[in-house]
Image 1 (cartoon, helix red, strand yellow):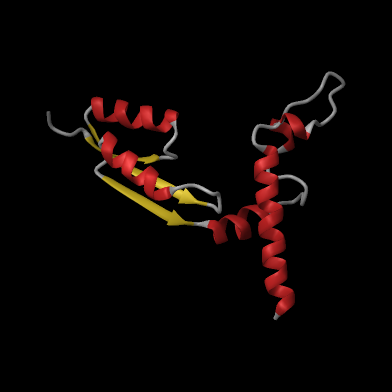
Image 2: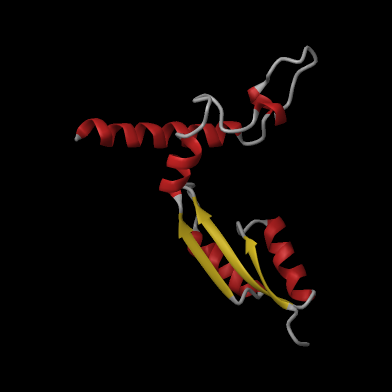
Length: 125
């Protein structure tokens, strides 16, 4: 079967994106897997191997942790929030409930760790 073309898949190595990779291959596309390292602890080489084993033509892994911190985390209007408050869960009274936001704790801890890491570099100079 000839290829319908190439698609770039934002790939994590998890179940969902692995299934999508296989499905895209079955639909006749050449899949290029793209993994963005934003500072998370992840075995990128294992994810690369998995993507190639599942049929990805190429795998790109890019370290965008500095850009993520500088442009997304430090540039936020609210230093306490990483997301749009209009999109997070609300309790019955309509109060903002950050503990309901999926991934809030993990993302917020990453933001705080990176913020303090960058702050220590700035103050050490």
